[in-house]
Image 1 (spheres, helix red, strand yellow):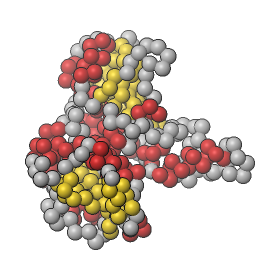
Image 2: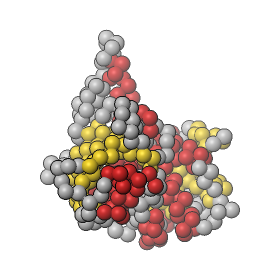
Image 3: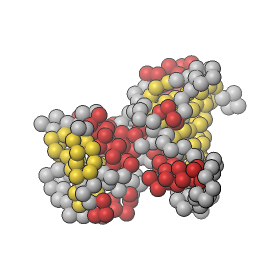
Image 4: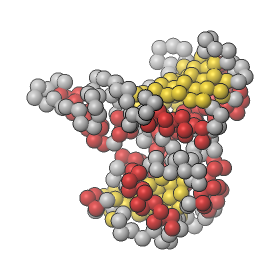
Length: 340
């Protein structure tokens, strides 16, 4: 016996990936519904070897459905998530709306799977920010060994994190560099993204940080340990898919780089590719379509007493969003619902 599963936002980048990953991982689905807004009503979506036709999110009855994967943004989630939850359908939400709610678990299954047990307070589980998800997968096994005091992270985030329009903008601006008359002015981003980097993701806050940087701080504390100090600089780069992060970690106890490498090799969800030679590391192009979080460039930081540097790369549409949501559904099923 399997589950009745809803994917809301099925026509977007993340929604389509959710459908793909549910099929790839053979999630026990008895029945599945693809939901979209009325402007996308009737659009066809693939689910394994099946073709689904989107139904109207606004009129959909969630009663009798087990799990709903939401990829519709905060504004729509605020309207429809409580409706689904009240009908008895557990919502796994990819937006930022519920991440900081103390009554809503914020879950990365490799890091804090036990947190899903608290879903019943609101019948909602939150998926973390894409940049946070891959980082905490790397931090947790190291934290268990040597206790992390402080993290300094710089991100290099692909345009797919901003949606399809951003991917189109990068493509159009790139073409415009070579084809006279096809120049494309910035629309999604405040400055040109092609052949450029933009140290600005989400809104600016009063202290000078951006909301994306604040998310990484707050979410790491909620998922891993509230005592960890985090400072982040988040940068948008002209890459279509795949987020990269340069992470500096300061520990309470000394951790040798070789031991850190061994720990990460054994950790769930991680693949270590760390050869000290040309090409002996993973780049975002190489991680696209993969489930893993890739770790490279593991080395001692000689400027502090107990420090390690590493390079972290992952497909942000997968581990950063759709895959993590499906893994939450799997964890929920195994720990709580236990139908399959």
